[in-house]
Amino acid sequence: MRWTMGRMPAMAMVMAAAAAMAMAVAPAVSAQMPSAPCAPPSGLAGWAHRHPVGAATRIGGSPVPELHLGDAVDLGLVPIAVLSVAAPLGKPPQESDHGGLVTFRATMSGTYRIALGSRAWIDVAQGGTPLASIGHAMGPACAGIAKQVDFALAPGVYTIQLSAAADAVAPIEIVRLP
Image (cartoon, rainbow, N blue to C red; front, side):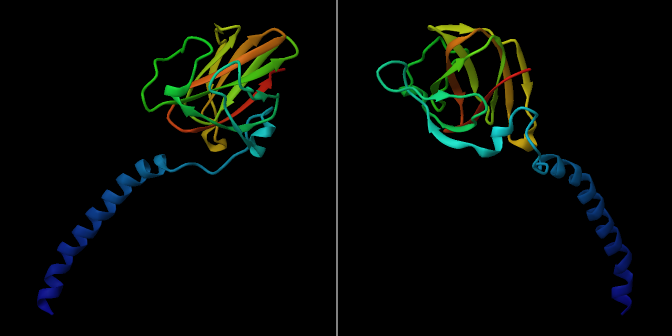
């Protein structure tokens, strides 16, 4: 009995030290855990109702999927090695990257936002000429949106070229801003 009671203060110190370490680690662990799901930003109502679409590997010859305003899709990408780019890539590709091509028709002049659910490079081109973006923002991670990129577009048909994607699927939606 004397041996057990003599060891109790030492045991209490060990337990206190372990509790202090757990409390110090807790903020780092909770920062890594994803937050609860949230609604997508205003205007991206289609985000919650995506459907699969396969991206094209080149413009011309094969049908190229056309994305429509407010129609969110899970875009199936291809290995970057088989992609025939529509415009010069905005970021040098890595061997393990994925990419793909789709078209989009702007019916009115204005600012169009492309929301993407994974990290990838977004180029918008018309006739093989890449267009400069006018804005970038991170999306709310809780909604599954990694980034949002804005482009000022006139009426016409545009090619959206994704590259530098680590994943083989990229959730994407296009909306016109008010």
